[in-house]
Length: 199
Image 1 (cartoon, helix red, strand yellow):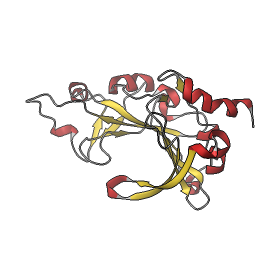
Image 2 (cartoon, helix red, strand yellow):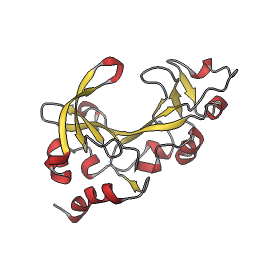
Image 3 (spheres, rainbow, N blue to C red):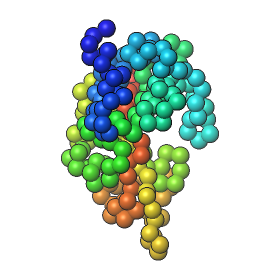
């Protein structure tokens, strides 16, 4: 095991908020696996089981530091039987995603990081506020992963008409309503395509 892999768990426990920016490698690489997570974090810190999924579903996931809301990482696999072929991993609040995306950022801040506008889904449903990046700096990351975020509005000012940013519809990051409701990142994740669709 390399020195870098040995130090990673220590960094997770001691780094200040938003200091550790992960890359699409090691535990977060396309060829990651449950076995690799155990090798990096220790068997006592890794647990695989059924967790809640979107729209009332359940799914299998491997969690690192499962009992700590501040440090918990959730890995979901394309190959659930072998627990390989990483589908996506949800990052904890104290981690920064590839490209510098982190919890609490505004839409405008993420757009500035990306260097280009992007599209997110309207709020108020299970996939509400989700955004990926088809163009810009966040769309072409080393290691072949994709970074995604979910935004949530902090408040709806009284009398503000927000229908155009609610529901299953595309919303442009340039929409001024997103600033008026103070939409902020409340989830950062890294994902990979299904093995059948990889180049």
